[in-house]
Length: 273
Ligand code: FE2
Image (cartoon, rainbow, N blue to C red; front, side):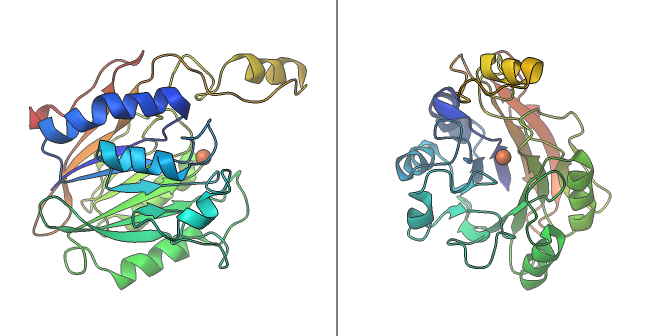
C-alpha cells in the first residue's frame, strides 16, 4: 500500500500548499491513503470544519490533531459528526471525538490511524504508551488492519523515538509531529515499522516554526509579549513522509521524505517515479 503522511499544516500558506500539491501527488504517486496533521491549520491554531473539508477535498483520507485540537471551539462539536478527524487518544476521558479511526484505503485495504500526544514538556495527559498499546492490542497489524499509522504529536525527540521502538513490528509507520522541523532519521526499524522523528510542517519555513518571525524574536530577546503569534504567509513547503507497505504483513518496505515547493530542498519518493 502507498501511504503519504503530511506534517502539520500551518495557516493559509500551508493550506495553499495542500491545495497546490496534494491532488497531483495523490494521482501521480497512486497513493492509497493520505493522512494530514491539521492542528495548526486555522490561523496557526486548531481547525475549522471548512478547513477539514478542504483537506478531504484535496485528497486527505484522515486528519489528525494535537495540543491545539480545540483552539477553534467549533472543533469540539464537528469532530463528532465528521468521519475522519481524530484527536490524541490520551486526551481526558470526557473529551469529544476519538483518538483512532479505521479508514478504507483506495486499494480496499483497512488502515487504522492513531493520534497520540507526548507528555515531555507538554500538558500532563494520560499515558500515551498505554493508550497506543490498547489500540494496537485491539487491532493487530496484518489481522484487524492492513496498515497502522501512529501520529505521535510530541515535543521531545526522545519520547518520539521511544514510541517508534515501542510500536516496532506492530505498526506500519510511527511519525512525529508538533516540532515543525523535518528530521533526517527516516528509516525502517528492525521490526519493520517505518519511522521518522518529525514529519516537518507544511508551512512557510521563513519563520519561527511557521509563525511570523517578529513576535517570537521579540519574546526571545526581551522576554516581553507585544502581540499575537501570526502564521508566516510566504510560500510554503509541503513536508511529510511517504511509505510503502507489504500487503501481506502491513510492515513497511520503503520510506522516503517528501518536501514540495517553498524554500526547503525538494524531496520525492523516487521509488514511485
Ligand atoms: Fe502541536
